Image 1 (cartoon, rainbow, N blue to C red):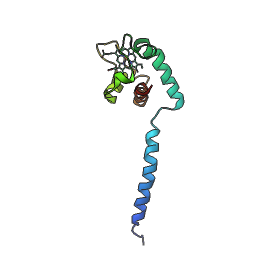
Image 2 (cartoon, protein in one colour):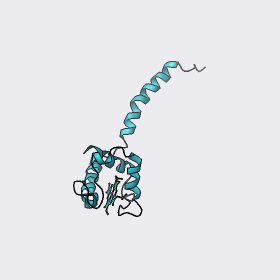
Image 3 (cartoon, rainbow, N blue to C red):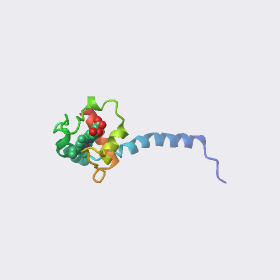
Image 4 (spheres, rainbow, N blue to C red):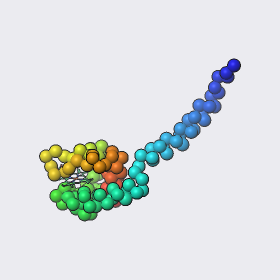
Length: 110
Ligand code: HEC
């Protein structure tokens, strides 16, 4: 006959989940190698419009102060889908959402 599972097994499960969930969230960040590629893309491609140091050019500055208060998803969508009617092109064909999210985090903290 099976014993009903003890309440301790759910405590144990919760403990395991508490450890695994943050690890899973980190797994979404681009690899260090991909991050180097993204940094290169930011300087070379994005920099051609936003300025080599992203201080602005044809496109606006992508500096931490200028991005303060702007919604992450709004900025990520701008990168992935571009802005219709402006020179900002869509990058969704070469960037994943996680890539774009990493770039926005990078712009906010650089
Ligand atoms: C051909 C020129 C061009 C290139 C290349 C370009 N952008 Fe842009 N970008 C623009 C322009 C122009 C705007 C402003 C659009 C507007 O007027 O709303 C813009 C807007 C943005 C914004 C929104 C800024 C804000 O304050 O709302 C982000 C974020 C952004 N670009 C990121 C990038 C990233 C990341 C890359 C490279 C992957 C890139 N851009 C490449 C021209 C460019």
